[in-house]
Image 1 (cartoon, helix red, strand yellow):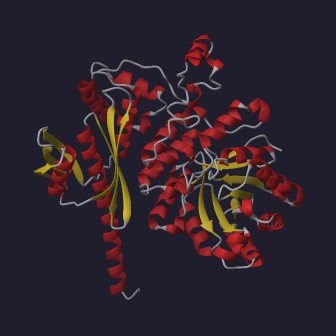
Image 2 (image 1 turned 135 degrees about the vertical axis):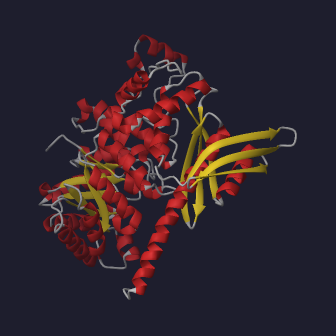
Image 3 (image 1 turned 45 degrees about the vertical axis):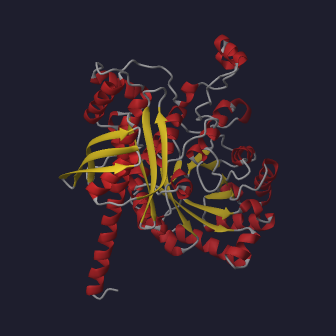
Length: 523
């Protein structure tokens, strides 16, 4: 049996569906390209039948990504499989992942069918998917609670039907490692054609055991692990990709297993996913948490000064966390910025040097010294900008009355190439600025969540504002970065306004198409 473990990333499917606000196509593509650099073997990037937006995202990523195989999810239904195949057809190679529930509680309570009927649906779905590709994965949803006789039967029949990967999910995070390992071992002992497929596992973290269960599974013969960056996903989340990668790397001598993950991309990918998904990484998170390589105890610090491996079983550099600081000021030339971005792992295709350098100079004048995390933040905001932004902030002036607690804000906004200036009074600078923006733009945005954080350290850190807004029964996530918190807040609002404007454009196009069809008698 091969010692190579296939890494199947589902950040853009299982992870994304758990977010408060859906990602845009551009944001999903950013993450997909980061996953490609990270070296994931397969990336599951969406559920095409679920929405036109998901279909477009899958199609865009399938067209762009070349070094990882792109996969889409489908239920055991022909319409789902058709949508997945159509979205993926632009790729050189792709995988269709189809699934159906197999546990008694799911079969009887959710599907309202007998197990034999479910088995028949599974076999038909696999055979139908094989019409489009020879790379078909089949999942036994809630396998962890499926009677073992039924599970063995389902796996055998799915392989006979043409599935080349069989996924055994602990969908609700119910099993413990000895139990889950036993399920995998039983499958290898009892399914006669098990050698014709790769056995995969997809473990959830409801009891905090997803990584332990996944490691136990590969020790018993599974050779694909399904996971997400930062462990994001439904409920308590999924198996954490970075933890799996570093366990298999750090304990390779004991486990004898390896992956194709480029570990030096872990930190950057984690930060990107956290930023775009508006899901902060907890400080004590293994591998990528802010405290993962921090030592506070005097005894620990003494040990670290004598030999780093006294308390660090891996180095921060091994996951791409470079602690060296290069003194970057407004006197620094373009070559310094280019070199620093290269050291951080960015290629010249990842950013526009002219835009980044101009933004750097503005920030350097404000802060005096710019750090690595500042550059990354600027590059991130540049990547988020759209050429066709309908709303653009040109100027913001705020005056606060500390005695009255009120504030006055004046904003100058470009709205579809027309510059509009408005002022407003509010119960504080952010409130005043938001009211002024609303007057200038004519947009009324219902903000459901406002979070203020910092990128970097110390009093000159960049302020980061994340807002979630509800608009026409959809949630939208906006982010703003600036040395001034009020400016960051306005940038986050404008980001959301542009997202809702694009959503309106899509809705208008759909309505026009519908009306045209009605006029032609098509509907």
